[in-house]
Amino acid sequence: MGSQAWTVFILGLAAFAIAFCLTPLMRGFAIRKKILSDPAKIKFYLTPRPLLGHVVLLTAFFVSLAVAFGLGVFKDEFYYSVAGLERISLGLFFTSLFLTISSIYADVRNDASDLEWVYIIVGALMLYFFGIRFIILKIPFIGILNLKYWGLPLLALWVLLVVSIVELLDFFEGLAGAVIAIVSLIFVGLHLAAGKNELYAIVYFALLFGAAVGILLWQFLGRRIIYGKSGNKVVGFIFAAGTVIAHRKEDTGQFLLFPIAILLFVIVVVNFLFLEQQLRPISAKCRMNNQRQNERA
Image 1 (spheres, rainbow, N blue to C red):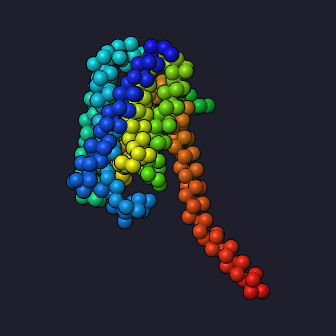
Image 2 (tube, rainbow, N blue to C red):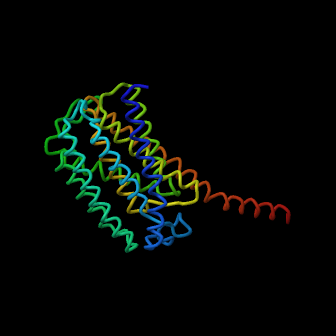
């Protein structure tokens, strides 16, 4: 394992440790303040669940990212200067803070309204202002497009698309976090194996993976905490921002299709399993009715 891989591993482990230690504390806080899911609005949770899982993820992510900057990890970054990365990271932090505050407000009021989508669009505008944007786009069989002013609406549409897909993963407890972790791990593994000198992007998704797994592990230990509908939007937003930061100039089109393809595949599989689970009792009842009719005949 090379030095770059060790750096990524240690930072991902740090994000995991922070999330793992912070989850029970945040869970206790959510229970004390009654920041809980409403089973009437989130039908997949039969009992109230403590929210604020996304606050844990973002805290672990940004603390670990700050440690990376403090250790000078990104001094040899290929695509961005350290100053440019600092601006991007600060923009990402303030945008995430804005969305997190709005999501906590919605959780406290137990009212996930359509206004949250306006917040997501505002968040996309903030990303653009801080330099997180599409500049050029290479589409297979078409060529390179210089986006110019089209970069802003494309960024907004891309963020809305990814956030919508992540929100659709709210079928089972922990599913959204698990999928984000899997996609992030695949991204990190492929880039390390290919020897790509895009350390910031690799670390970005390594931190997402570590933080998501740190929260997810508590699902199996009985001290569960969920993102909720508002939190899922914030997690989807941070994931979407990462794909924009990480898009490579030489193969942007293929790269952007990669996370969407995986997320859509998971949604199709989960929908199929969920539908099968819902239809199983109906199918069993039909078989019993047919059997009774045959016995009477």
